[in-house]
Image 1 (cartoon, one colour):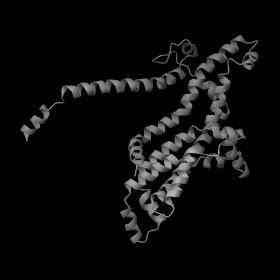
Image 2 (spheres, one colour; image 1 turned 45 degrees about the vertical axis):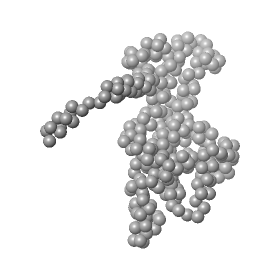
Image 3 (cartoon, rainbow, N blue to C red; image 1 turned 135 degrees about the vertical axis):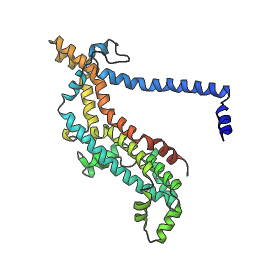
Image 4 (cartoon, rainbow, N blue to C red; image 1 turned 90 degrees about the vertical axis):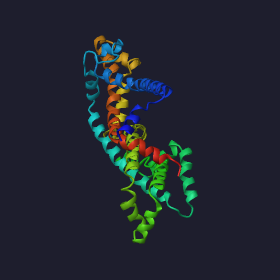
Length: 308
């Protein structure tokens, strides 16, 4: 036993493999640094003094700690309300999307007459759609303009996510389970609730990330369909704040500060860091969601994306 263990310890990788592993590790460290540095730069710039940011002195660490940018952003009274709106739209919209997607995925994983046509019908919509104007007219005719319900139900299902979920169910939940459940008198609805959903936790987590991030980052829907400012989500408000703070080269900006050079300088300083603050505020929840779902995410995507 000890002899076998000693021989195992003596076995080493060939020199070529070790050189390859080292080079591979170095390359991936460089790639990781290239990806993470811009994110780190945004974070430290958002809490640095605007003069240091403008001078390009903020490279690796914050300089002259300052929350001026965050104060400029949070001075907008609509921000907190829009944050709550975004949370409501994201939570309930994601919940609805996941439920509908899983139900449709389960249906498409079953054998039934006309299945190929239904699959084609879904896939066709991935490549062709009516465009914004027909959708706008439909929303208006349904009476959903300027409503909270619209922000929750619009873009409810992504066909790509539906196909990933369908493949996951087909590959990981054997049909024998359904046959056994059917013998015991279970209907499709009972089987879906008591068997399919408990065994699909991984793909549900992936769908939550996909749908949650998409809904959190959606500003365009509110920009087109919402007129009541009390119903606007965070992203739309941040877009307006950013456009206002960074419009430092427009005629209206110069006319507003024509007799106030000090005020103009202060506005430029705030605008320089406010854009970084907007990015941090808007992307923070999405990053946190990825961190908590990471252990499910990669495996769920790989399993669900394989052809069944």
